[in-house]
Image (cartoon, rainbow, N blue to C red; front, top):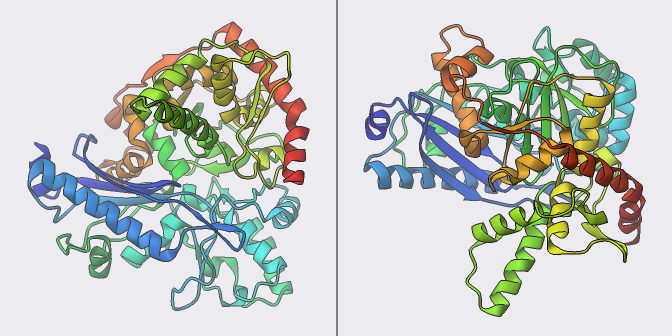
Length: 528
C-alpha cells in the first residue's frame, strides 16, 4: 500500500514526542516505516529560578507540530489526515505537573532539569531504602510539602507531561508504566506503584494534615498493549485545529522518552541496553536481577512492559559541544566562508578521531546545568588545560566528545564493573551519533563495549511511541520484546563498532583526570 493509500484509508499510525528542544511527529505505515513528519522547535524558560515550559506553549507546540505534519502530508501525497489507526504521545520524563479539581495547573510545570529537590530526594531515599532522584515527581511533591507551598493542599491530579497531554485529549488519567516509574518506584511484579513506598509516603501526608493520598492523585499505571482510551471530539479539535481529524482513534499508554528510546532501539529484552545522547544523555540497561544495593547515580525504572531497568541519567550532553561549534561557525562567517552547519559538525567530529586517546591532557566539563551524578546542583561549562598539555584542534574536539559522556561513564562503571551487569547489545541514538562512526567509537571506548547504531534510530522517540501505538493494535498476543524483534526489526541490530584497546585505555586515563578535576568545577560553581 502506498503512503497516500495508507493515509486515505486511515491505516497510518501517529507518534508525537515532546523533547527538550523539539516536539516531533512521525506518521508510520503498516510496515512501521516513517511516511511523513512534522516538528516544532521550543526551549525551556527559567522562571523564578526553575526550568519550565508554559501550558500555552505546550499546546501551541503540539498544534504547530501537527500543522507541520499536515503540510508534509499535503506536499507529499496531496491529501488530508482524517483518520488514523492509532496514536501515541511521549515526552520528557519526571518533573512536576500538579492540577486542582478543575484541571487547572497550580504552579508552572517543573521539568526534569530542576535540581532544587535535594532535601526531599535525600529523605525519601533513606525512607524507601531506594535511590530517589532529584527529578522524580515524588521528589518535587515532597519538596513542595517541605517548603510549605500553598498550592499543595489543592492537588487533585499529579502527572507528567506525556500523561497531561494524553489526559486532555482522551479524558483518561493514565500513564505508561515506564513513565510511571519516574514518578515513584514501580513494583516489577505488579506493574504499578510500589505499595510499601506508597504506604510510607501516605503516612507523611497524614502527619502533614494533607487531604489526599497518593493513589488519589497519581495516574493509573498501564503496560504496553493495554487500552488507554480514545481521542475525544474535544481532543481531536485540540490536536488538529483545522478540524479534519476524526475522534474515536485508539491511543496507547503515554510513555516517557526513556521508554520510547528503548523501543526505537529494540532494547527492551534483558541484557540489552541503549544510550540516548542529545541535549541530555541517559543509558538504559535491562536487568536480569535487581542490583545488590541502592546507588545514588543509578535510577531503577522499567521498560514499557514493566521489566526492571538500570538508568544513568545525565542532565548535560551536547549543549556545550554546540556552543563550541557555534564559535567555529562565527569564525567562518567572519572570514566570509560559506557556512554549512552539517559540514562543520562532520569535519570537527572526525577531526576528534585524530586526537590523542587521552585528549592530550585536555579536560572539558559540559555542565550547562547541575549534574546530580557528580553532586553538583548548578553547572558551569568549563575547559581546563595545563601549559604542558597537547593543545590542538583534534584534542580540543576529542575532549569535548569525551566530556559530553564523562558523567555517563562514571555511572555505568558502577553497573559494569562493581555490579558485574552483563549486556549483550548496546544501541546508541541521538544527535551525538549523527556523524557516522564518531560518537559510536567514543562511547565504545567509554563503556568498553561494542556500540550499535541503527539507520532508524535517527527517527527517535516519536518513532518509538508510534511503534508502541502500533503494538496496541497489532500485537497478536506477542510480548513487546518479541514483537519488536520479530515484526519491527526482524533481526536488524544495526551497524556495530567495537572498542580498541588504545581507545579504552585513553578514556580510562581521561576519566581519572576528570574525577581529579571535579573540585575545579565545584569551585567554578561557588565563585560565579
